[in-house]
Length: 476
Image (cartoon, rainbow, N blue to C red):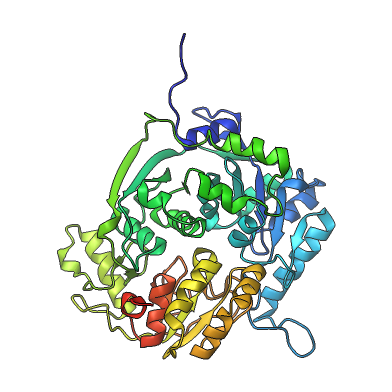
């Protein structure tokens, strides 16, 4: 009697959603369980449906919110939102119109559940283990923290999924990243993922889905696992995944769109079968020792150019390949940094705490721990990831901590992560940011971004320069 070969988490989810297998000439057709929609990548997709006279195929599997172009300043005295420009306002209005026309469930600007798309979906319980999840946004990989296979897709693909509830995909390869040991005090998920990307490089995961495994990963909270999976795309990976476990189930139970009663028990029983089988084979494997890690920060113009906060800025001359030397030289020239200088003490003009990477309640608590009883020396924006996060933070008094420190407490949105809504830094300014990309001009033309954890960002705000967060949290 033959037995089925052991399978990875990726293989189980992929096989369970395969409508038609790929061939040498055609990609696979993959069924989509959840489609998340926002205002920037959806207008053309809805136009495609309108032109062809097509409905949204599965309204029950489609959720929309507003986040990229939304203002984070409160409403004006007249009760109206003040947009940074006409285009941003038009995008928001168009999504409201499209959702009403096609019957899509929309959590619009200022409503109770509105927020950054990769924050509001999970907190509603819409993202569940074993699902396939897509969104017209690069950081859809966030949802892999629940054991889902989650892809970012392009605008034309958004239209395709709205019309068919399926996606054309080539089967990705698998990359196991095992993180053993325990993260030291003062080191979190953002530091871990920056260290992984620094080792892999921004192209090291190309064509793969990363599964994060090991003692250090199992010890992470769901919020931290979302941070980890969120930045998988920055290593070039198609997605990131963590197998569901008791931490996952406890986080999901009781959420608005999660199963209830007998359906919950049956779902958990299914979810317990998802983790990779003993003996399952991956296309590649890497190992990390969590106990050796320190707080991390980027110094260059891609997320792979990251170092411990205690390290010196690397010297391009040490790079073996000409292309690598040129890339590093260009990054240092743009950032205005010198090879060999300590990154500690580098002056900072702006600090941003927020985004789909680090805009959850746990992230705000981490920043507040550093800021409590202190004053900021750099302009500091704290932007919650959703209306629910905002209300929870205010119930805990975190907003008072931020305001008393001199930080700006804003409305939810993507904000300074992508600078589409008017929240931006000026040319030549340095910003320590909890977001996910430090490309040239990402946070404003000529702006210089240093990616870091909420604790490191808050430490920089207090010091007015890059600082070691452990100096501000020990004993607290």
